[in-house]
Length: 279
Image (tube, rainbow, N blue to C red; front, side, top):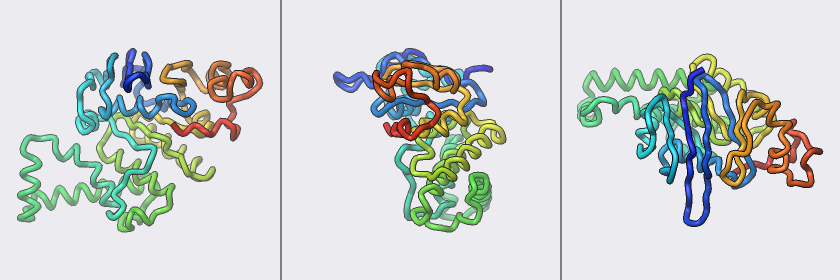
């Protein structure tokens, strides 16, 4: 399959610290991939490089044939890459539906002059604005049904259970019609049943919507249960990549998680001692 995302030799330094060091990763279209690693491995920094929050000091990031170097986060989103964050970032006083509607902004601003026209129409309530607002509301409601939150659109977002707030974030990311979605610890704080439901949702995002999924995840049951390819970072460097079976048996990965004394004796079957990756 063709590479949708092609990252080559990316480096990011913060003063004397090299947070991401010569990392090369390729993500195939319509795949589900995971990036894992111990605390401080550089995983979220890597996502921030992909999405324009940070600019790499070296290397290339090509998405769907286009370089993303130098693009702002909103431009990366408009190019077709969406993300969620390790810490939930919602508008807590807005309704669930309104939070999802915000995610469509990059698609409503595609044409020059659209923002000014929307402002004028919002003041005069012209028919064009009403039609657009109806479309946004209907699509947002459809996405809430897709992620399992049908009937909760009018609730205030901060009143939702933690797991449902995660689903709202995913729906908002999907609202921008991405080709690729980056999920930063999407099952954090979920109980085992919620994690299983989340895995089913990630598969549906790929299978039903055709969206490529890349996740940072600390729960090895999720990683091993859903990923087709796994990349392992440690101290900012890529130390392994491959299938779940390859990663589970890799002594260097075991060492990175558990220390040299445990290499060769531990496994990657999702034991609790491997669930501490939160960086």
